Length: 297
Image (cartoon, rainbow, N blue to C red; front, side, top):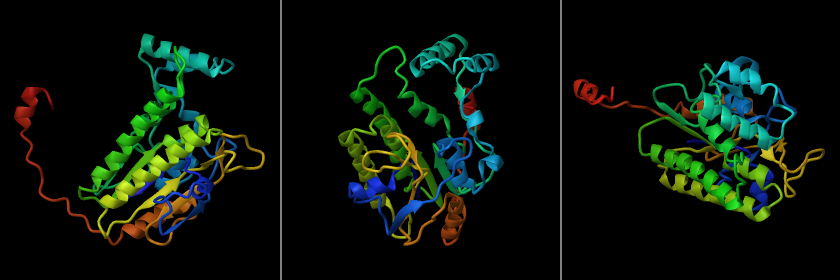
């Protein structure tokens, strides 16, 4: 089980004395920045999955905010000077009028989730990257201001679907199960100076890690990762403002050892899963003619 918990800050894990996220071995992990001065979510998670840098896996800042309509994409280049709110409003109008939408590409490189025996959900730059856009959209007020309770409702709604998915996958044969959860990143940006709200998000995430651990068999293992941390009053960093990405990524595992650099994760996972065996089981008998008649296929 590989849990990618975006922006999980090592100093906050200790500061709030969490129960489940610190496994048999845990601590800071080296991370990396490519097009920005600090680590960027869509660039780092493909590194973790493939062991390749952005110049090789191909997902960089330059192609994570493109529009799938070339005319809209060209026009968007001239809106950089507008406020975040105004750009959001124009983006909503563009989507309604043209049907265009942002795209986040997935890498073609092979990695820890490549193979019939491996399943992954919402891993930026690898699989289901559109889920990341949905989380980002929770911070776009659109036509109306967003209350804290409305924001929380949106981000928890998305996060629980991903964590419950991971728990359910444990009931089905696989050697690697991976999921990415963006709750603590958005919460860190919005609540970087609000300890009560941010602590609640950390404790809620820790609770769900406990649920997943309880669902694991004795021979299952868990690896928890983050791509970077978050600068807050309780996890400060020289020269950084609250709400910025910190240079402290995180790793934690049930094995007693852990990867200490994002580039080491792929090799660590492959060495760990070598002892697992996978049996695809009996093939399903699909009634093709019946399903074609119903329009399913």
